[in-house]
Each structure stands twice: as C-alpha cells, then as structure tokens.
Length: 91
Image (cartoon, rainbow, N blue to C red; front, top):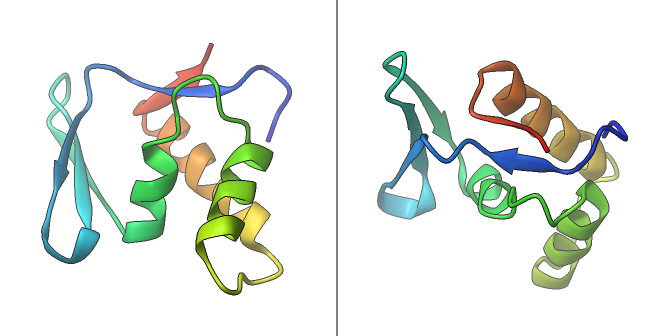
C-alpha cells in the first residue's frame, strides 16, 4: 500500500450486506454497484483511516487458520480497486 496515508471508505457509499456474508457497495452519486465477497467485506469494514494494510492482515491472521502467501497483495489489490472506483480514498 502506498504511503499516502491510510485509506478511508467514502461515507456516501451504501453497504448492503447480503446472504452468506457477501455484500454490495453502492455509489449513489453515479449509480454504480460493486459486489464483494466475505473477505473483501471484512477489509471494507476496516477502511476507517485508522487501519493500515498490515493492521488488516494481522486481524485476518488472528481470525483465520491459514492464509495464502500473497494475502497482503490481495488486500492491496482490493483497496486499489475500491479507490479506483471512487468508493474509498486516502486521507
């Protein structure tokens, strides 16, 4: 993750949690929706400007028995995607 600051979720984005812990992020400013899986939902809920990628990774490690070696890259990729879509940004 870049050193620009921690990422924070766009407060205008609506989170709708669905069955089986899947969710949809909806941006009312442009009508775009973005479906996210349970792990992405876990990450999304920590985009509060206080959690770094390392913090999120540590919390996931506490909650999961095993993680793929590229877990940090996957977290970064998700964060980059929501920033690119305007669903989150740097402080």
